[in-house]
Image (cartoon, rainbow, N blue to C red):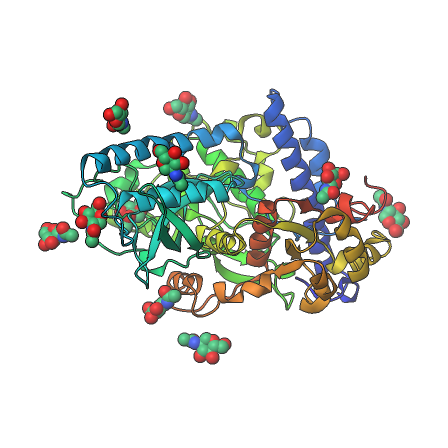
Length: 558
Ligand SMILES: *[C@@H]1O[C@H](CO)[C@@H](O)[C@H](O)[C@H]1NC(C)=O
Ligand SMILES: *[C@@H]1O[C@H](CO)[C@@H](O)[C@H](O)[C@H]1NC(C)=O
Ligand SMILES: *[C@@H]1O[C@H](CO)[C@@H](O)[C@H](O)[C@H]1NC(C)=O
Ligand SMILES: *[C@@H]1O[C@H](CO)[C@@H](O)[C@H](O)[C@H]1NC(C)=O
Ligand SMILES: *[C@@H]1O[C@H](CO)[C@@H](O)[C@H](O)[C@H]1NC(C)=O
Ligand SMILES: *[C@@H]1O[C@H](CO)[C@@H](O)[C@H](O)[C@H]1NC(C)=O
Ligand SMILES: *[C@@H]1O[C@H](CO)[C@@H](O)[C@H](O)[C@H]1NC(C)=O
Ligand SMILES: *[C@@H]1O[C@H](CO)[C@@H](O)[C@H](O)[C@H]1NC(C)=O
Ligand SMILES: *[C@@H]1O[C@H](CO)[C@@H](O)[C@H](O)[C@H]1NC(C)=O
Ligand SMILES: *[C@@H]1O[C@H](CO)[C@@H](O)[C@H](O)[C@H]1NC(C)=O
């Protein structure tokens, strides 16, 4: 988050950049909202009508009355519709339901009746199917916001009467089909009627003995009697390696759309997404492979020092594995290497069509047979923005593939961890302060309405006493919310620092991605995690509409 006072910036480049960012973000989100509505109503073209007016708003850099909205980070999964979810690859894994458990119980009781009966039930036997059934019933009753997908056979905990159980699940509030893993420790007692009962259940990730058993699955090993006990697949591992084209002939067989770096570089993350999805959308329209630069420049407003940071990996923020599945892409470095190799070794060069202006539309390129279509963005801003390709008539034909762009699974693991530690039973409040609270001209009441005393007064009317309360905020002073602590169990992202600290999985995995150099948990990652935890809250309180009557985009905009 930018700490410096923007008024102190020299007027000039900074201001132009800031204001264009500002207009941009407003633009993107209005279009996003518009799109979501548009999808529901199935109009002939959601983009077309709005495009000219929005473009004007976007490209004018004067008299911007908006501040960049860097307090939420929305990606495809937050915009996804129900229908998109139906075609998920997990459609084959059925959620566990009461009926399934009942059927299984019957099977087991038939089995035990035939054999010895109840006398064997003296010690807790973790591999006894009745143990698993007991846990399944318990979980289903307790965690209403969770969809349980599959369990592994329980293993022993640290004591005789304890079992560690691991399962995969989805959160009903997450619209992607991604799965997460939990493993907990349960303490059992023997009940009446050949039954186990749970006397204590451990918290999130407490069942460490069931954690990721790295046993190779032997192909002969079947699922056993219980078809819902999955083989030990290592789904926790994220495969976001950079795909290679393989041989040179493969390269020559392909058709590519290559965008050189344009004016979007180092602009805000919203503009990045807006532009990237335009390029990817054009590639899909042309049935071409999109050449992708995985190196991102993170705009200064997400960095404490306010400086742009280059060399950030796409995979720190977004789910590259999912993108690979949804779209045909090739990494720029791989692509350029193969291209050069080909041109060097053959007399006949690879056919390339160079396109120097965004005014050349995707429709005009439809018939082009060149192996590579190379859009160069060498002009002045804003002529050199990628998204300009998708304006005007092109908006009729090109749809941004939002469904292909999800947040990084590594960040989502942190989100799941935070909400799992609260057993998904928490309320959330979004407290926007930062620059907006300083700007009394545009947001005259925001500062006062989000003051500690005002928060205590307002939240008491909306949230039950002593509930878990997650505060998503851009307020950097940790103790700012202390007054709420005498009414609620307050949770802030900084309470979970160890999830990205140097002993965390996240740290290990991102360091590996980054060629062994540790990766900073930066401002955009914070916002991404904050946003997603916020969305999982049971009761959600927003700054605008709920805490203050000021308008989101400044005075007189609502
Ligand atoms: C922009 O603001 C300046 C000074 O605040 C004002 O003189 C000018 O008329 C405004 N321009 C537009 C197009 O509103
Ligand atoms: C269990 O046994 C009863 C009666 O013997 C039978 O009707 C039922 O179908 C059996 N259930 C299963 C799942 O095998
Ligand atoms: C535990 O239960 C499994 C499955 O019912 C059985 O095969 C095993 O012999 C039992 N172990 C003990 C020690 O009772
Ligand atoms: C034990 O089973 C019998 C018959 O199936 C039932 O009537 C009784 O309520 C059960 N007791 C408990 C404690 O579940
Ligand atoms: C798996 O298969 C290998 C040989 O392919 C065998 O040596 C090993 O014991 C098997 N492991 C299990 C758990 O069955
Ligand atoms: C990772 O994904 C690539 C395709 O993108 C595939 O070729 C490769 O085999 C996968 N690696 C693993 C370990 O699954
Ligand atoms: C892309 O492929 C689809 C289906 O294969 C086809 O209908 C469409 O005309 C193709 N578009 C172009 C630009 O070749
Ligand atoms: C992790 O960070 C702590 C505090 O920042 C430091 O004392 C420790 O040496 C670090 N450990 C590793 C393995 O880098
Ligand atoms: C991180 O990696 C180091 C070295 O590869 C390993 O010793 C450590 O156990 C890992 N930490 C986690 C949390 O996986
Ligand atoms: C926040 O405001 C919206 C819109 O006015 C309202 O629907 C919602 O119930 C409010 N939330 C709470 C927790 O009061």
